[in-house]
Length: 287
Image 1 (cartoon, rainbow, N blue to C red):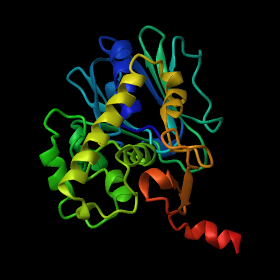
Image 2: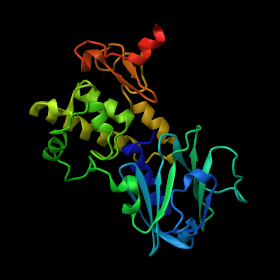
Image 3: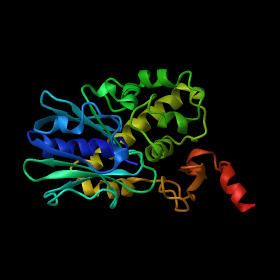
């Protein structure tokens, strides 16, 4: 799933390639991709892109005196830039293509989505705050005013475990499954620790891990072409998606806890005092 660092990199890439150019065609291919109908996608056609903005994991294409084209890539969505779009309209129902945006230069991009769970979402709205998920977003963890005091205030009464709290977009915008694992590993904290139980020293450590992990990931992604961002993300991860591999810090074996539709990875030595976390799903499978 694209998270804050990858979406930030896409924002920079699209700013370079879209701003100052005219959108001549928006072609929805998959019925499921459009979440709004008024104004229609054609409302952005013939308009110049004046800015590209990021809100959490949302991308916002701002057009001159017109609607915003807002995208959320969800779990399996991606943006593929084309220096030259294919001639002729795309064929619905063939492959992962969900929506195509064409510029007056012949360039443009495709929004694609792999798998059967169609969650990629595109909204055409007059104001980004009309997008339900965007309107509920918490603060951006890389914003200049997101200081340690703000972070501590968010966690003060939070009774959920750290893993769930960090992933909640209404609490903190932009962190997903992968980077929450990375942040907790950097902070040397159990994903099952209750957020409100943190001491002031632990809060400082987690805040610094949050900012450092995301900032470093953004820097790694900066300037990387859209098509290479997935590989760049994976190469920079130390524990997420690396079950069974040695921890790069201590050498212990990275372990996993599985859920119904996701999993988390962690290092027992670095994060849980050497104790493996209970994985009820795996326990059932082994019976």
